[in-house]
Image (tube, rainbow, N blue to C red; front, side, top):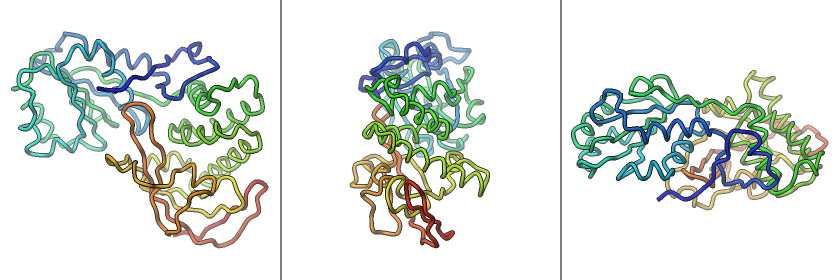
Length: 343
């Protein structure tokens, strides 16, 4: 059974509350209602057994979270005997379908494709389900590309990044918590500038939002803003690409190990990936610990728990850090940054 949570609608009036809870899914009200309408509708779009809805959008934009929240709706839960979640690569297992105990049941299958689709495996899986599941069973496909859309029987739902205004409300809730931003105009100004630099990054908002919320000090917030701004400018100058776009492409990012502090050795951060089951329980340093120069392993290469979600589907992300050898030191007002030799 999925845990309870709350949905804050995309109407900004619903977001302008002094005490916003962090354990919420922000916006996406319209998209959520579209998913629910598809799931509870009895129309079959000409398909005798299975309706198929693609939910598409960029990486880490919230597709899986959206579907999980829709599946928690009581109307959806009452429609299906079973709700089953799978990865796309599960379909490639030859014994996968045979082990499903879904004979004549009305089931909902949610399948997430991280990359491409093995069309043979997909067609075999779909054909099997059409022969065994009960009437009204449905499939939701989660993917990143137009390729996935062709497997649907319903028009795909495309998820876009939040608008600047929506993202600011999201970031503000994380950074301020129960504080009223109107009572802290200096922090509000710094936070708004920082939200702009993050370019809609959900990971960045959650990582830095927690750090800011735990230390509502203008000097600390300014140091974080200066470090993030410097990081963005360095990458735009050297490669013309924002760090968030590099992470989206799974390309390495040259990153300071301490945003605030006297010593900021740099690391090459790469292979940002979703943690395997139980991997987020390992004693890994967190990104917040690394960014304040706290718990840093002595090894030259180590994994970091980047972020652990507090809402369904409770995803965690891990990245690999590789320390870079210092070449020369450059003085900064808020930190002493190191320029590294390329690895």
